[in-house]
Amino acid sequence: MNESLLKSRAFINGQWVKTDKRFRVDDPFAQELIVEVSDCGEKEAHEAINAAHQAFKSWSKTPAQERSDKLLTWYQLIVEHLDDLAEILTTEQGKPLQEAKGEIQYGANYIKWFAEEALRINGDIIPSPDGNKQIHAIKQPVGVVGIITPWNFPQAMIARKVAPALAAGCTVVIKPAAETPLSALAMAELAQQAGIPDGVINLVPTSEASVIGEALTSSFNVRKISFTGSTKVGKILMSQAAQNVQRVTMELGGNAPFIVFDDADIDAAVDGIMASKFRNSGQTCVCANRIFIHENIYQEVIDKLVKKVEALKTGSGLERDVSITPLINQAGIDKVKRLVKSAQDDGAKVIVGGEVSEKHNQIFEPTIMTNVNFDMDIACEEIFGPVLSFIAFSNEASVVEQANATKAGLAAYVYTDDRHRIKRLSEQIESGMIGFNEGIISNHMAPFGGVKESGMGREGSKYGISDYLDIKYLCIK
Ligand code: ADP
Image 1 (cartoon, rainbow, N blue to C red):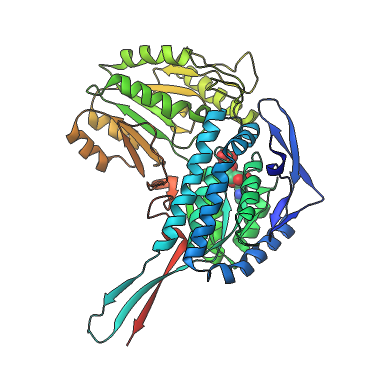
Image 2: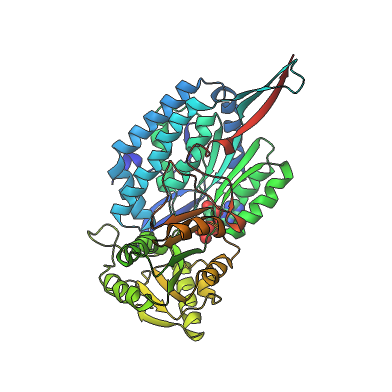
């Protein structure tokens, strides 16, 4: 591993800060310590907020071209160190190395994209009703942004928020997930090498998330919270953010329906299901969670999937050709076990897998469950594990109703050859994103985000920067 990128201290105002307390970061496959990391509390959070607040004064006035150039240099350094960053990511998070490389490039793409968008923060000149003045709308950075991210994409979730924030002229205080702070710290090191000034990016790893969450939301100098994680924690942060009327971007949990109609290209649907479900061993918020198959093709789809699922190799993310790796921790395993067991008790059948691997106590065998009903726990909660759960359906109206019967509304997938149906379902399915005949939909050029309890705000695309900008109206006579 590249030791110069393996950082273990907090990063505040351009300094690597040691704390008395430290917490363990473990490799989920080897189940051993990688390194102990500085454990920040309220004091460090306030130092970081103050540093970001000071740095905002100059960064917000730094010319757009200069902000753009620095982001672009950061992007280039990340791409140059892609292999090293991927190794750190796999070691702390567990995902297959190939996927880690994919994540680093995916995250880096947001930095490049927003480096370009920094140059296009255009306002408007609007005619006035009485014609005797000018109305201008200009855009300004919102201020210091508190960023809280999860462990499932430890690099990309940070890149997707920091890039638009910095492009807009904001400064940031980042709290990475306790399971995966190392990818974040390595990014901070490269940001410093890229010449991003001290205090613009601050990073406070912690084992006590709520302490940092409270420090960020109780400070008036933090003007926005951008969070990716569970709906439960998102609600806590939204209510805390109300104290100071901080803006919020919330990317919360999903419960994606994956619907395959009997007119679909079945092989393409099977490939889409495999790609959508098994990436990161099922630990993504856009994973297919409930798979609805039309009854005419139900058996054929399952027969094809059985072969593919049985061929999946489990093991360490650092081994070649491995696609199913350990879940992040024991709690993740316990949740998947509970959902599979309760579905079985309610009448679902396990036809492949269904157990923790004999090889490794944190790997759940890739699993296929049939006879699932849309109101079982496994169809109502995010599984966050490598389990395909199949529900048969007979008509479009009923499947749309079942797909929408959830408070979540992040991603959905539909396989069909009928363009009229695509048009209907585009409007009827309640989710922020729909993949039609495509199982992998996220990229830097598209707006990522949810509706209902999956959150608010969009990341990526031309819309992604607006969450970090205020519009100011100037009436000029
Ligand atoms: P997950 O189930 O994916 O771990 P969480 O919502 O628990 O989802 O975690 C996402 C992020 O939110 C992590 O960085 C975690 O440390 C942080 N977090 C958890 N609880 C709180 C809290 N009360 N306040 C602020 N951040 C929190």
